[in-house]
Image 1 (spheres, rainbow, N blue to C red):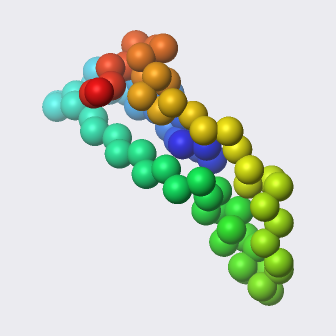
Image 2 (cartoon, rainbow, N blue to C red):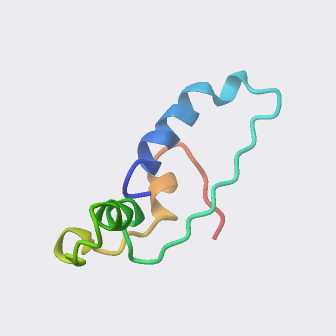
Length: 74
């Protein structure tokens, strides 16, 4: 959700009413890793892991949709 997930939810919000079946299930797998950054470092030739840019505070992902028009399961 950190890299582009939230913006994708905004896109879903824009178009969901046009769907034949307007249900969406989102599974958030939180592993404390910005995987995109990790793979970029690997692609640069085994660059050493630099953890500081990947250190993010924990986010209450269930609270994100509740703060907007979305509903989350407990």
